[in-house]
Length: 203
Image (cartoon, rainbow, N blue to C red; front, top):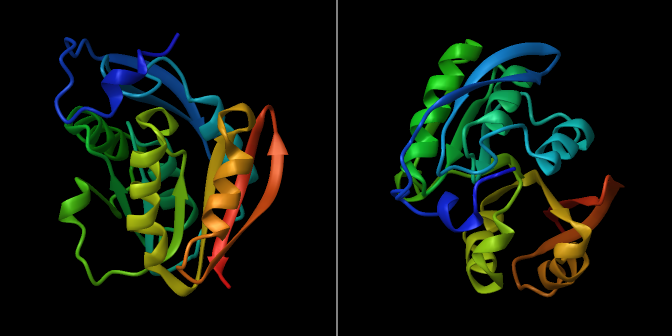
């Protein structure tokens, strides 16, 4: 079972760290990666993340790529493995997650990722690709604030892919995104295993 959801979006989780090693397959490579208590899905690759990695088109081969809510790093690492000519930004508010993600990127042999807190991303960057398994459990208002901060920073030809559980509001989120004045259009790319992948691009 995963950790309770009130831990992984805290900057400094109160639970003891208790690091552990899990086996994860990313891009056909079996990797021994490090997780810990107080981060999202510490015992396995989250099923939603697995759906996103299996179903999203390849990220842009160049430019700036963004993983919103990177956790211990599986999405960022996959982006870097698929697009070695790009620079990946993995952002999270949970500092324990960021430390783990840096450790895991090193273990995977990818050096083109910068893991940091959201405020450390330069304000003038525009992203060719955004991937996210967004933190639905932070609540609708906080989730909307998060998406409002990052999705408008898509490059003109950029595209974002978000994975959201059907029963946790994927359809209502799609409607909300299409109602925003950002010049973006959200469509459903695919559905698998109780999840939807939403695609967001410039209208």
